[in-house]
Length: 360
Image 1 (cartoon, rainbow, N blue to C red):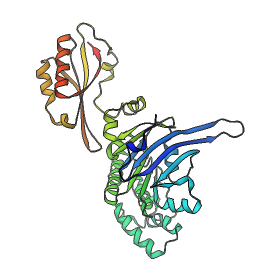
Image 2: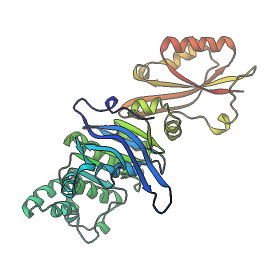
Image 3: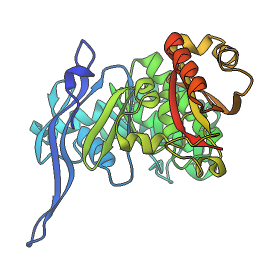
Image 4: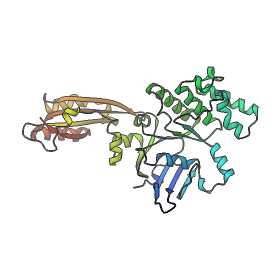
């Protein structure tokens, strides 16, 4: 399954477009080639934060390395702001890479250079003069909150501070696209949150397109407006983060999100649930609140409609891409009359539900 580019791209065109992209590795000396990407059609909206999620080995890292020309496709095209990456010569690739910044999981800082000098490195490589370098580096140090650390070395910095240096360095050449390769995976939750807030502010204030790959659902849920799910070298589901996270259609998406979104039943209850009710059983149902239903007192109305036999077993409230999403797991008698009243109530209110099973 592939996702049409036109379905996701902004009206002024995507920042990155993958058109029928395939990537093979190996295949020499009689050995079969390994297919990392098997025909990717996807567009990264300009000005958005887009997350690519998937299991290890799904093709995430290969996909992102195609964007800045670290890898070239075996077939198909990768377009960055309309430019075909595969058609560039070495000079063209150098120009492209100045417009595409990248931050890494393990920071990739030079231990012998200070914060200031690490940030300045890509400008030195590009041949900028000392005055221009200083004029760009100082505001970047302030932007990432390291004004008092300019002359420190990486060994003197925390993990979060090192990643802030990495972000500032990626911004030094004034790119229009920022790539993030598992940039928060090595950080603790509190530091991760601060880095995500920094990336959100950069996206908002600089209008920078951000493309990040991660296996952390919380990262995508927190900052990405769009998301694509990759599995076995194919994009299997894509769209607005809120839509994909709250109504996942593909089994890979459902598996990735199962532990991250919504209220959960304890294992000792869920392990005994059955697909068909027996006499005296109760129905265990997840109620999902979003959009207009998120702010209505529907739980109280459900109890009023079904009677005092309704039990609330679990609940959770999430913020997904800035939109509210809540869920409750309830149980009530599975007799025909109660089930009919429940069905009528859900139809009347537009409340989304998921029957988890039946049990005593």
